[in-house]
Length: 411
Ligand SMILES: Cc1cc2nc3c(=O)[nH]c(=O)nc-3n(C[C@H](O)[C@H](O)[C@H](O)COP(=O)(O)OP(=O)(O)OC[C@H]3O[C@@H](n4cnc5c(N)ncnc54)[C@H](O)[C@@H]3O)c2cc1C
Image (cartoon, rainbow, N blue to C red):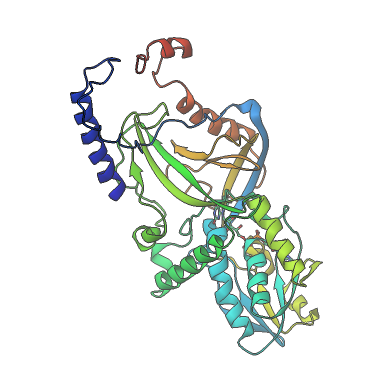
């Protein structure tokens, strides 16, 4: 890619300049000819602050269930009594990423009959975005939900752009799903970008380093057969990943690949979405539904069902499979501006803490596990797994020895 070839060009120029110099700290020779301007060195520098990956910095452990459906999110409609119910649930590990695009599809269906008074059930990522999209289309909207942020499952997500994470199984999707998914993803991405630049950064861009002891190969085989669409379909939305040269990263591993991607500071994103909803005249009612028939008590005729994993009990939807994910939260380190992934553990540095999550070797970790009890041993193991990456690069040396063994730079 352009950056790489530019960098190679710079190295050539640099070597040429080096060959002309007399070495050491000798002063330049006055030839009477103005020297060529020093090329600017844009090479990535290992100036990343180390993450303090220590178990005594764990301040919280949370568990969330991804609402997974083999066929992908449920977006069909049905009538319950005199109500039109538009379903908008089952977004697996992609609920935040796809939320806006999914909302656009659901709201269009809810408004198709000319209704201007809309009920949204649920106030997670899918409910809040559906409510905002309906408001922006001119509707009066009431959210009915058992829980609000920060008590909803969406509040316990990692918070990165992951539009095809555990979204469906290859063998179960309808032929039109890839196109529908791309529409959702592109519309969502565009909407997320509209939240950049705000105070407290509900949406930001971040760097993520995939770290490995062995050279990067092909993606590990996926035993469950999840769909993987993001590459190449959405490659134009984010910069091309770069495999870094040794020395261009400070981590104590042999191989590193850097990606740059959007992230969501979920605590703030949720507050902004709910705040905007209320500012635009939206109403919220705390309420739990135990059966679809209870929807008949609502005054609205069009209802968008955004109950996430809750739809399994409410709608008796056995097609919803829980995929457990646990996060160990380390005390925030604002100076850590990147995340890593290493040996099946991923991290994201957010304003509200450093998220550390065991993701396993493939996406099957947590599959069909509905246990929402935090597991301290799993959290500590995840922290222990990544800790060596932040040790001084020369493995086996004490920090002071490692520093001494590094040749002095310059003169
Ligand atoms: C560990 C982990 C990390 C994740 N990381 C990411 C990520 O980085 N990026 C990403 O895009 N996605 C991520 N996800 C996926 C994402 O969190 C989910 O897809 C998303 O939260 C689903 O949102 P939702 O609004 O459908 O459901 P929920 O957040 O569960 O919201 C459901 C709402 O419905 C209400 N409700 C439910 N049942 C009833 C009822 N019977 N009566 C009344 N109200 C009811 C609830 O109170 C709540 O308000 C992650 C998931 C996990 C587990």
